[in-house]
Structures are given as C-alpha cells and as structure tokens.
Length: 157
Image 1: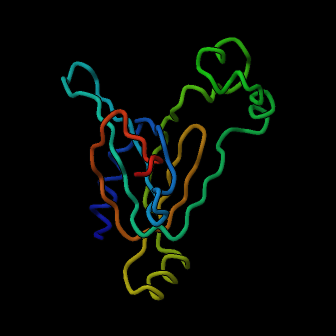
Image 2: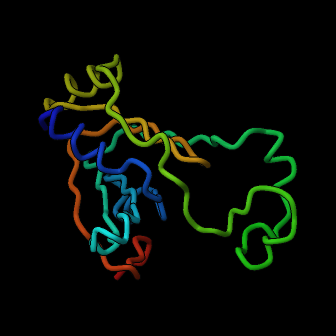
C-alpha cells in the first residue's frame, strides 16, 4: 500500500474519538472504530468509520493514563458515565477516547522489514495515540469504511 495514501487516511483521524479497538472476530485484522465529527456549521453529519488494519501481525496496546491518575481511577463507579460523575479519577465510562495527538505512520523498522521479507508483501507500522491508550500496529493494508452507529464488531453469526 502506498505510504502517501496511508498517511492521508491516518491524518483524517486527528481529534476524533476512538469508540472501539481490537482484533476482529476472525483474529487476523485489527480494527479501530472512530466517531468522526465536524463543526456543526459545515453541515457534515457525524460518521462512524472502521479503520481495518489488514494482516496485522503485531498489536501493542499500552495506557497513556499516568500512574497517579490510575491510582485514583480504580473505583468501579468510574466505568459508568452516570455513576462516574462524582468520584475523582478518570471516567472510563464515557466509552470513547480522544484521538489526540492522533495516528501516524512509523518509519520502516526491523519488524516491518522482517515481516515483509518473511511473507512477501509490504508491512507498515502505525502509532495511534489517544488520551487513554496508545496503540502500535504492524500491518500490511488499511481499509476505511463507514459503519452504522450500532456496529458491534465482537458479535459473531
């Protein structure tokens, strides 16, 4: 996949919200569901976009919430937006993470070279940073599609 096209797709995630991320139910591809909004004056309606990182051979998720904030964010009332309004700490229950500073393509690495050579297709690295999780993925292709608001990626047929 062309790196300029990848960079363009990733640039479009800036300052939106991640509402879900994880491997698909068939466990090969990694998806990030983004709730994209625009200034209401533009007339552009909000959309849910599925960023499907195809052939994802490595996925690393780490917290971006500092340890001091974690310490005061262990109360289970914080996993519900309504009960999490009063306690101090990070309210996990808002069910989204701000995509800031956003997503960006990483330079070629030993991992991307190793996977490219082993499989015979190009692999890329991406870093996705939010206010709660940072993701680092090694993948080959990216597809972006719109999904309905009720999309539940973990439901199986």
